[in-house]
Length: 89
Picture 1 (cartoon, rainbow, N blue to C red):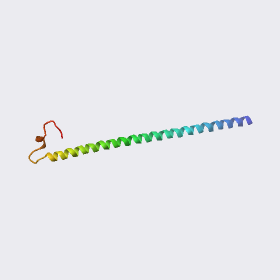
Picture 2: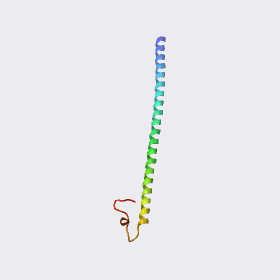
Picture 3: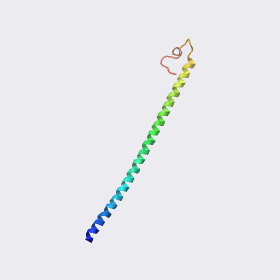
Picture 4: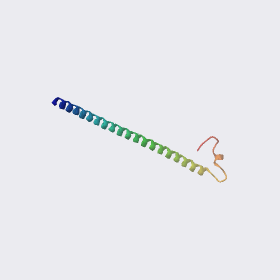
């Protein structure tokens, strides 16, 4: 009987060690996924900032062109008559 109990205790101890190792693996995996998620969020934020900057540049360019067109527009003379063909403002 004591040999059987000793065998059961050794099995339980091995199972406890195994479960502890699995817990550590799970914690490491969770930490890995958190880091990966944080990296993805940072990438998305950087992409969003870049897109916003590009949109702002386009809007600024559009406003600048609109201002130049209004400046060069004289009621009787259209802009296309003042600027050579193929040129842009």
